[in-house]
Amino acid sequence: MDRRSLVKNVGLAGVLAAGMAPAVHAQETLRWRLATSFPKSLDAISGAAEKFAQTLKLMSGGLIEVSIHPAGELMPAFGVMEGVQSGTVEMALTASYYFTDKDDCFAFGCAVPFGFTARQMDAWMEYGGGRKFMDEFYAQYNIKSLSAGNTGTQMGGWYRKEIRTVADLKGLRMRAGGGLLCEVLQKLGVQAFNLPVGDAYQSLEKGRLDAVEFVGPYDDQKLGFGKIAPYYYYPGWWEGGSELSYFINTKAWATLTPEFKAMVEAAAALAAKDMTAKYLALNPVALKKLLSERVQLRAFPRELMDAGFKAVMATMAEHEAKSATFRKIHRSLRGFQHDQLLWDRFSEFRYGSYMSGARL
Image: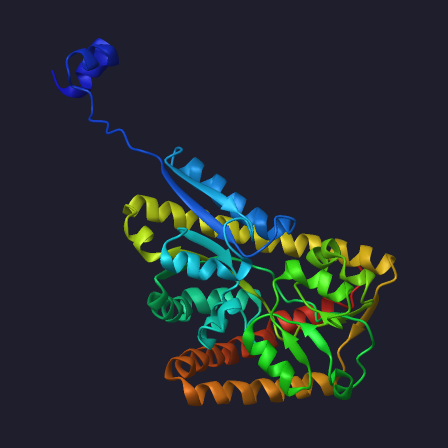
């Protein structure tokens, strides 16, 4: 009688009694800690980390548990990269451009001014060599990266006064995102500071800042910037689509079995998709609410956009001259972007232009 027939005829209890059960190895639960660069109140971002952890636990049958720690709980918001690098925590959810003080190439993992939209970033990362470039760069910091989702095209921030010309930026004190943006804004006369978002409201309220930019209507409404700075500008030309990242310590990653690595990647992909969809769904609702509260919505003047573009290209050229790695990644990004813009001209741009004027 073969094994299958034996199980059928005598049942599992008989097989166990006969000592013929398949080998089952007890395995300890793998427990990782994930530190984020964001407060828990930003539920679209923090919620992505929670969804990642929940999905991974389900997929692994409870064998992988990831605890989530918001900014300040284990380490400061801008300390998470070093936390992963040193192995203090196994993972982080962050925006890579927060760490351009270490190397300006960190910006490419999140957003550069006049860069990709969300879908273009996804295409470059997965099929344009972007992930390969970034992981080669991150390796010197003991980091493996995965997409954590994209916030989409951002708004241009909140201002105490109207911005009619480039001259109105002179001397403006502003909380801005990653280091490249700060450099660009400084060329336009802005005193730009890369502050954790948790510190931005208090600085704006106490008059230490004249303007703040963060993400878009859903998060901005929660943070209450419009109560102090009523002029809300668009578009955020410095962040056509901001990619958030999971940073994973390379030694921790190497200890995972191929099956566990696949689970981590699948859970991250699901959570990333969920975050992007959530922002797309919730931003229009939040924008309508902000407008009902008499927020003053304004478009950046074309003159300012042109000046910003010129400053961006000058800044990129300066960094290319200093770093072969920066030059390599930047040239890849712009080459891919050129082809994407060509395709957009005949697809989404034309379609979107028509639909924005259609009556639904």
